[in-house]
Amino acid sequence: MDNLTIAIAKGRIEKDIYRRLEALNMEKWIDRDSRKLIFTDEENYITYIHVKPSDVVTYVEKGVADLGIVGKDTILENENKSEVYELYDLGFGKCKFSVAGMKGKKDKYLTSENLKVATKYPVIAKNFFKSRGQKIDIIKLNGSVELGPIVGLSDVIVDLVETGNTIKANGLEVYEDLFDISARIIANRVSYKFNYDKIQKIIDLFDSTVKASDYK
Ligand code: PRP
Image (cartoon, rainbow, N blue to C red; front, top):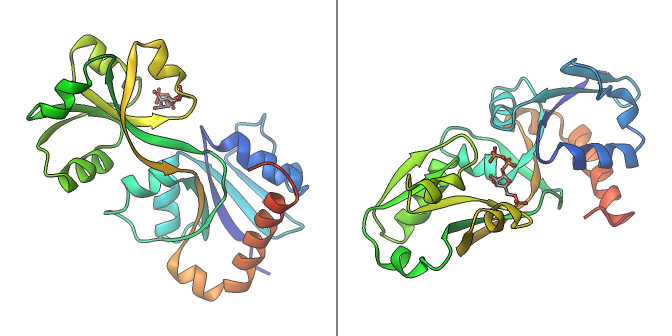
């Protein structure tokens, strides 16, 4: 039997993915202390590859991976570039996309034209403000975006808010929530057709960890 390949996103949701695999007794195939990027589960015929979140979408779209586990934020940010099926909401890695800025300056945000928006997610930010007909300038950053309004690089940020600690610790406040996100299972379109039963079995396994526990 050919193995199914699952691309796992490194970073924010990784810990929760392993907790689920652990609940299924499938984590034993992965050596998390190793620098290896590829692991094989010989019992369940699964190959795992560890990649950066945005690369999960690329590996799945190109068919190198049959399935991917990645945040909805990454899926939305890459929506224009890739065509994959989004199959299942894993229910963890929950957070919000929000617009935030310096505390007490929300009025300026609501009235200002050509707002300067710092973000790691230019596609999501552009789409949001476009849908409202508001003109903005995007400043693409790769992290620590909360600095933007503090140092005057931007008026606001569009970013993930999970606990709200980063926003608070930097004297910012949420002006507006855009939408909720969580971790999803995505599939290559062709593989989904040809490996439907195998893929469904994996989704059922993950689903059983939700029903059998309070991981959600
Ligand atoms: C993410 C996000 C926020 C922070 C939100 O950044 O971009 O900065 O986490 O989490 P909180 O609401 O629980 O504080 P990440 O930790 O990935 O680091 P980065 O800014 O370097 O990308």
